Length: 322
Image (cartoon, rainbow, N blue to C red; front, top):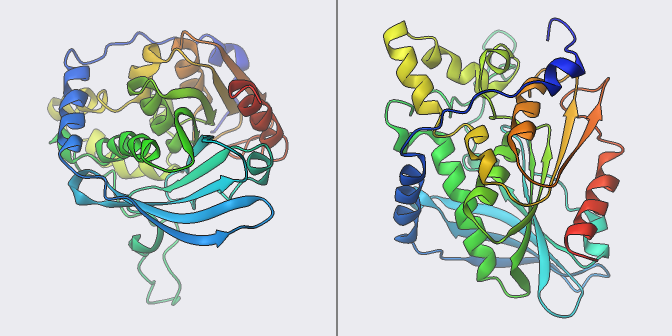
């Protein structure tokens, strides 16, 4: 950001919500389409019988459009079905590492590889002059789809969250009614959506949330890959621009904020140039639940990297009453 933003300005960010009248109907239609697709869950043991884990598995299951969702499921040693934390990483970033602290307290963890990421990610083209891959390249997953909302990338990601929750219900050793969703930046929007449309979620960890209150401040941050990918669409001629903004409202996670009734833990870096602090506060301010925020005044999108894991762990212990 070109200039520092004040805490007071962020704290007072409380935009008027104007959700589409058919928002819930749109998503109900998506859930019905998802139900027609079998889960087809698979488990491949990576590590069994270590001192921490009972098992570590590469897992997969089917999502909308017959896409195969991949992840890693770590189940710790403990009697009975384990509560579970699900991690959704940020756009174009790798999945999070397995958290030893959770295994130590008997909490399972599922790390989802976002659709279109991992080995199948389209690689950046090579610059013929330098022989190196182009910097700041991105695969343009957000460049299309707002003309036809069913094709938009976020619709598929959100439905993948619902399928992830369904997958946990059929997984041995997992308490599918005791789930915390943990998202980083774009992944936080996925976590919010999952909690908005499933009563199996008991808590949210939202680290520097993004894709919430997608207004001029957030759209000004061109260092953000999805902002840069979407900008040409949103900047089209004025007659179309209104339509695109209306279409975007079906996916902006601030529209789901009022549905959240469970505890939520936020982080915010006041110098974040990827997830705008005002957008984070807009989402926070619209939630009517037990909510708290860790604010890092002099940090950016990686806010709290050193301190936050311990805070998250205490939150997980509180929610799961460990």
